[in-house]
Image 1 (cartoon, helix red, strand yellow):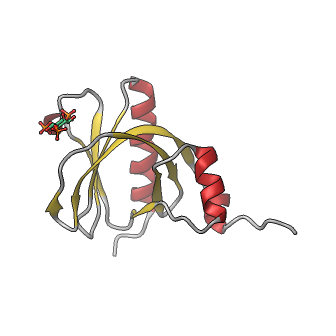
Image 2 (tube, protein in one colour; image 1 turned 90 degrees about the vertical axis):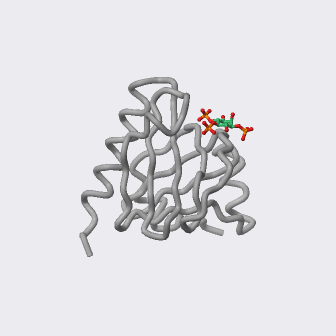
Image 3 (cartoon, protein in one colour; image 1 turned 90 degrees about the horizontal axis):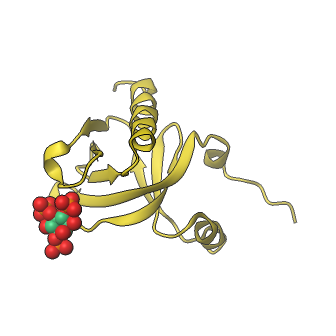
Length: 126
Ligand code: I3P
């Protein structure tokens, strides 16, 4: 049987590993818990996979869904004061979810910051 990739997969703009901590859900503060996440950016959303890419791909076949972040109306900003770690930025969604993303490697976090910012800026404003 042919495997037809979902449309999103054809529009992937960037993917890779970063450190991730979700710090609010629907405006409610969460306890910060950093973990490595496989992150997939497409034009309208970011998906966070808890597992490796390989694991994520095999889970996808069984209907397992990653955490998905809607970029419409989202904000992105550097968040030096939110962590003792270097190179941290925050994404805040319209629904009040807040994520910190981090890498020790300067160019990696800069590339991600600009890729996500560009994706947000390209989306229509209401
Ligand atoms: C948190 C943990 C985080 C740390 C956070 C701590 O402790 O050490 O790594 O964030 O600091 O509260 P716990 O595991 O007991 O919840 P950073 O690594 O980003 O500094 P914070 O409370 O100042 O955010």
